[in-house]
Length: 235
Image (cartoon, rainbow, N blue to C red; front, side):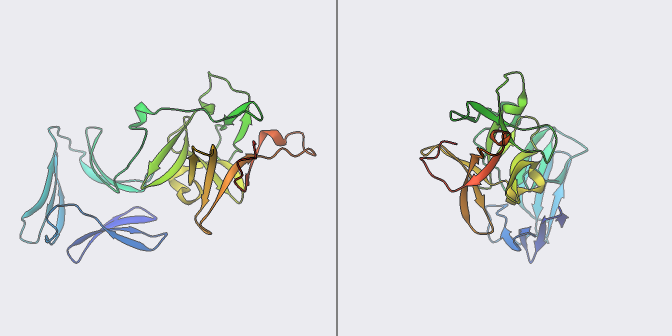
C-alpha cells in the first residue's frame, strides 16, 4: 500500500485500487491489458516496474533505457496521483494527467483581464492573499495564469508557483496550495460566454468570478467575489 494522506493505492484481492479518502471511493487501476491477471506485488527495479502475480509471472512490464538507484513509486500530491519516475521522466502514473498545456516547462500562460476595469487578474506572492484586479505589468509573473486539466477537472494555476491556485474559501477568492485545496480550486473558463466559473462540489452549482464594485468601498475594485453567471454582467 502507498498512503498519500487523502488518497492511496493498494493491492486487494488481486486488484490494484486507487482510493480517494475524501470521497470514500475506490477505482480499479487498469495497469495491464491482461484483465484476468491476479496481481500479487509490484516490483521496482533500477530501470523498470513489474506487475507480478503470485507465481512470480509478469502481468505487465514497463522499462526505461535509463537507470537510477532512486527509482521508486511516490505520491505526487500536486495532482493527487501515484507516480513512477526515472531520470526526471515520468514513465507511469495513475490517474493519468490530461493537461491542455503540456509539461511545466512548456506552459502557455495567459492574462485574464477585464475590459470593464481595464485591469488584469493578479496573484500576490503570499498564500492566503486576495486575488484581485490590478494594473498590468509585463515584468511580473503575478499576472500570468494557466488552466490545467487534472482528472477531467479544471484548475487555474499561477505562474508564480505550480502549486499555487486560485481557490474559493468561504466565498473569499484567494491564493492557496493546489495540492491541499483541490475541491476549492475547481475553476474553468467558459469560452463561448467569456466567464471564469467556479464549481461548488458541495451543492454541484456553478458561480462566476466577478469584481465587487461597491460604491461605498473605494478599494472594492481590487477584489473579487462570486456572482450568478449573467452574460450582461461585464464585471
